[in-house]
Image 1 (spheres, helix red, strand yellow):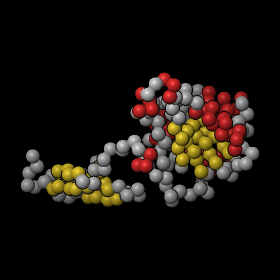
Image 2 (cartoon, rainbow, N blue to C red; image 1 turned 90 degrees about the vertical axis):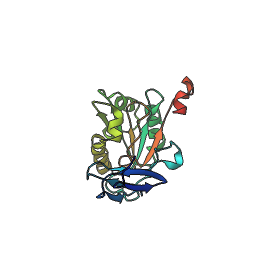
Image 3 (cartoon, rainbow, N blue to C red; image 1 turned 135 degrees about the vertical axis):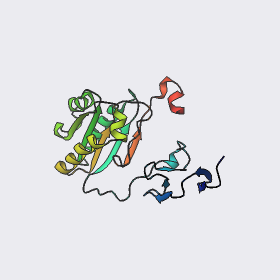
Length: 198
């Protein structure tokens, strides 16, 4: 039970007891209220993400498209057709827009080679990235390995649109909003209802 010295904060209809009267709070660019009691551990009392489309993270309205073209991220687990979608998008859009693509694999360049083999767009506009670890980390937590090639391609070819496909990974393979302006997530529903439900 909280002592009388504890301070009760109230955010989003949830109460949380703390023993530090020197807590600082701030609002991030998306309007979420965060606070810290030790200057290090930042947290909020926003309810856990519900999974509803209407409550997804919104795009950054302040992003400068002169630095990097509008970027579409394509994610999902192994095998639902992410790279095949990349191919079809390239074929459909390449005559109307300046395109470039970045592909992610763990230790290979298979997806990039697939796009080159099928002449999706000119080879020099395709950058295969080897993440060396879980692909979702390279599109969600530390996006530098993708941001570099995307910015380079954007500058070299004055692209209108950049496509970035994640290596097949688990259901946590969501794109950081710093990396993707629009996100397409592909699943395979033929194996049953488990993945669609999750």
